Amino acid sequence: MIPRIHKRGSETIGLIRYLYGPGTHEEHVDPHLVAAFDPLTPDPGRDPQATYGQLQRLLDQPVNALPAGRRPKKHVWHLSVRASPEDPILSDDDWAAIARRMVAATGIAPDGDDAACRWAAVRHADDHIHIIATLVRDDGRRPRLHNEARRAQAEARAIEADYNLRRVTPGDGTAAKRPTSAERHKADHRGQQRTPREGLREAVRRSVAGAASEEEFFDRLAAAGLLIRRRIAPSGDTLGYTVALPGDRNAKGEPVFYSGSKLAPDLSLPRIRERWPQTSEDNASSVLPSVTGPASARRRATSAAWQALLVIDHGEDGVIAAQIAATGEVLDALAQTSAAHTRHELRAAATAYERASRSHVRAARGHGQALRQAARDLVHSGPALGRGEDGATTAMVIDMLFFLTVAAAHWHARKQHAQQAEAAHRAAAHLRAAYPAAAGHTMALLHQQGSRLAPSWQRHHATVMRQALPTLADRILAEPGWPALAATLDEARTAGHNTTALLTQAAARRELDTAEGMSDVLVWRLRRMASLAADPQNAQGQRASGKGAVPSPGRPAQTGTRPTNSAPQRR
Image 1 (tube, one colour):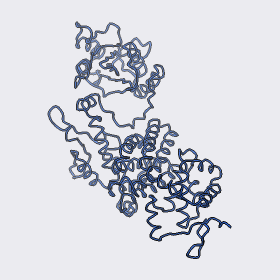
Image 2 (cartoon, rainbow, N blue to C red):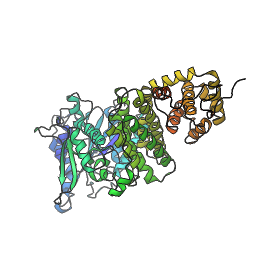
Image 3 (cartoon, helix red, strand yellow):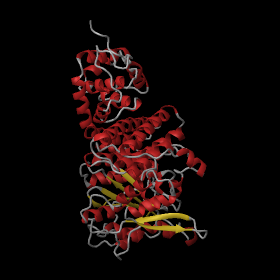
Image 4 (cartoon, rainbow, N blue to C red):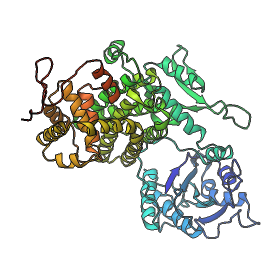
């Protein structure tokens, strides 16, 4: 149940005409009164003798009774209450009861107050009603409407429980503005799944992901094919911007422009500028050397995500909020550079996470630059291939971003940011769904390699596992992914690492026992920490060229040195 208080108006008759009219796109069906302050209130929708003017004069009577100088300029109050799409269709009696609860909760017409404001509730669709009220009581006083939006939300939560409706998580005023019913109807009429507002929001988010300057941001908007208008000060500085889709026109054939702040609170130009370092020196210190390709960019993003996890675990709230916001840029950048078989879920993850990226905890400026640089690297390195090192490093970064979004969800939950926590969990679910498509080929190759290891090395790596992770070893060894982890341990051993120490370090960095597949998580942690090729075929190429070659167990090394963690020779 979603209540929304609209801007106050000055003409009662104008709103009545809209509520009883056909709608902007003929979307209003059977407009009629379901409840009002007086049971005898005329209903122009069902009574042929009733007129809009009669209803207007009845509602405006207390306003007109005041001397002209005491009448409020904006005296028309407007609340819409919409059910969720999955809710059952409520009856007129149900909506009438809901309307009475809403006007009581908001202070328009408290229960038992015979001198309260006059109001009427109109239903012109199955899923919502509109309540119109005039803001002068019958005794000539003004109603007390302090925090009426918050009280409407609280009453909506109670209504959901009483009517067994979908429980909507409470908001905090930081959500992006929802498309209007007219915008939704327009999109439906054109056969479009999203409204122009939603499409523009995604396009602007992608354009700002990893952008390092204002000009780069506007260049990306133009490259995305958007129409752009800048608001310029006399000094020549840009004060703001609006964007439009070329094909989205109004009745006059003119493009429909939206300002950044109308798309999302953090997409206004001043808020976007807060993402960038304040000085050129700060920018120079935060920008890392450029990457050379998609795989390198994904490795950089994995490392940046890991550092962000440490901040979320131990940082201050403003710094954590900055990391959580910058994570959204990485997800947007990854989605727009992903291969076809992961693109749908990654885009869904980025879209879901958008709500989690902001709250009333203001992000501390200057933080999150490593993640933003990672997003920039992803964008500038170009699209990744679905297989090979590109595909394997995509799985690596998805695995890390999953933990990062879950950490963001937990932080939001601790702060009682219900909508943000839910959004972060949805993003994590999409990342979990994207992971098998990205990791399947690589994990299959590693599984084959692990299965082909000599029995003595298989036993050795199992022993190392029990030494490093005694409480988790049995579970990990029983997982289907254990052979892939054994193959990774063997590569790390071949590269000269102490695998016991490496495993201990990998497990100590973050909990494992809640992971769906602990062996998969350890594979990517070890391959990143040991600087192993993400794709095992790359590692095979290195060994074929003689780099890092190590003898099989039971045979002496050609160099005369014993490999680290070598298995004991069998006698």
